[in-house]
Image 1 (cartoon, rainbow, N blue to C red):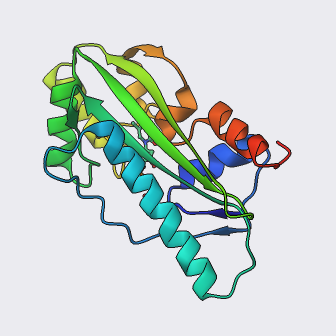
Image 2 (tube, helix red, strand yellow):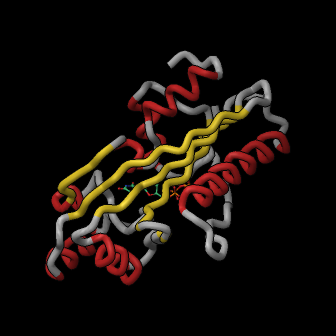
Length: 192
Ligand SMILES: Cc1cn([C@H]2C[C@H](O)[C@@H](COP(=O)(O)OP(=O)(O)OP(=O)(O)O)O2)c(=O)[nH]c1=O
């Protein structure tokens, strides 16, 4: 199996259910949303692109057919896609928007099977942040675990101290919904 993701979280989550990919391929996918693109179609498009790129890379390298798994996680505030935070300004902006509100975390999972078949799932969780003070947001930013995370926070990190509600899958928020991923794999003949 190839995991088409640079995310160490996805590797750890897969390991949690006993799956160790044979290779990890970070694809060079342009994750810029299209104009007026909505969160669900966006997550699906990006996950499909990551999977297709990994498939092409593997074929070009003459690799034998196998499973290719890709995912994309998006933090959505209504119809709005929050960015993946790569700097404190972006992370602060996200946290100010999320403070005191509920939002949706969407992960699109795409699985290519060795026989050429493809399966997909779109999984959603609802997360609610308590209202945060400026000092609390500053402390979260100082923690640094927001870096590279959709919406500028990590539920598995310091932000958990401010999350009062989660409905749905926790692993979905961290980057790979394990129950649904296991279902996809079983459906294509992988014994999970
Ligand atoms: C909301 C949230 C996101 N995240 C992570 C999951 C994803 O790794 C990341 C969203 O970006 P993604 O583009 O889904 O993934 P990535 O950039 O880490 O890796 P790749 O594109 O190579 O597949 O944010 C958390 O770890 N915790 C959280 O609470």
